[in-house]
Image 1 (cartoon, rainbow, N blue to C red):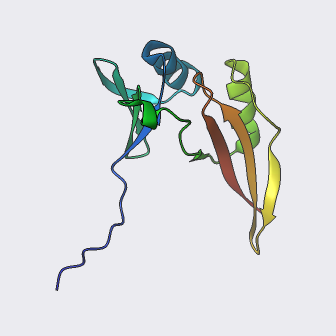
Image 2 (cartoon, rainbow, N blue to C red; image 1 turned 180 degrees about the horizontal axis):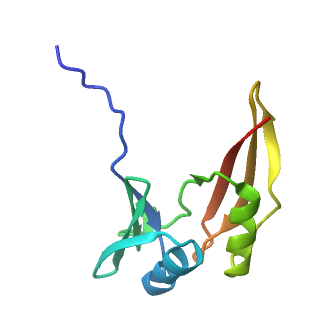
Length: 125
């Protein structure tokens, strides 16, 4: 019997109101790899998952996106680099969960469309 459970995410959509402004933010401020654009849609590579920036198709879809957490190796270095590129953070990197072999660090920022995004890092003890 074939496994019919879901496992891999192929694409995540983020609502945007200004496609050009959002594309510049994700490409220039976050340093993400821009794959292609098609009309008002822009696509980026997020570690093998395609990230699609898209205006909402209907009024009922016009709401902030889910929080995306970008995994980084060195959260302090990434935080400083992104601040230098003009990204405004909601807070400073901080420990959210001490685990047995590492501390889980996070910090949050907003994109050009006011969607909340996060950085996360597993820092070895």
